[in-house]
Amino acid sequence: MSHDFTAIRLFLRSTRFIAGSTVSLDRNQANYLVNVLRLSDGAGILVFNGRDGEWRAILRGGGRKTWSLEVGEPLRAQPAHPDLHYVFAPLKQARLDYMVQKAVEMGVGRLRPVLTQHGQVSKVNLERMESNAIEAAEQCGILTIPAIDEPIALRHLLETWPGREDGRRLIFCDEGDERADPLSILASVAPAPLAVLVGPEGGFSVEERQLLRSRPFVIALPLGPRILRADTAAVAALALVQAALGDWTGGAPKPAP
Image (cartoon, rainbow, N blue to C red; front, side):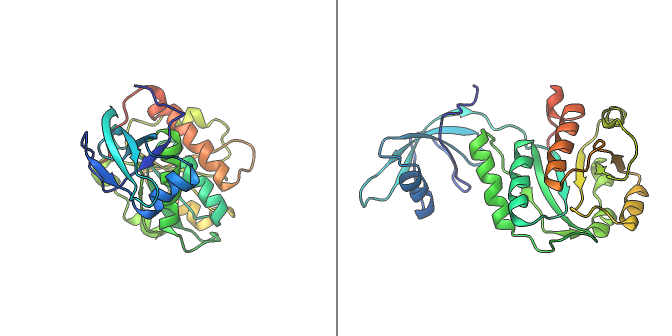
């Protein structure tokens, strides 16, 4: 079944869906549906929890009653969790919000903040990142919420890279790479689990570029002749990878380990 772009969707993390059951809404969820979206008793919405697919539900309550959802029938089965990781230097809040939303829309299954020498942000609000990820999933018909990691230093990330277990390659968006054809580079990459790395607004340091290029699991990738802001580079890089090696190719996405 195709996605209904006109439907209101709500993510309910801890709920298991059973046809005919009733799900109580907390104050924030009820406020969003009733006061923000102006829904009333009997309104239909779609619900998902990241595990059981998408279900139809009906809003029940009114006045001073406790608002709840009456679960209907399942509409879409839960797909495999996306296996594409996005590794990034944190940005200032508005651009980070945008970047997280776009990464989710582009099919990222894990968000991994990394601290670099030229990064302008050292602390990350993980709860806000998750809220933006949920909002993007609700608006775009996505049924999974990406995992979100604690920030980690770039050197430590490379020293503990999990590629030995699953062969994951790290596609490093290198603003200093002088090659002109990123698609031909990606075409030569053998099928494997992938991660995409985009650095800070100030770029990677010389030492960081050397460190990245010394690792056998790292693939340097240019992003064309223009200088891109980090949030723009995220969209460009993820689009290239999905088109050349990911789920835009028509192949089934590989499940995450």
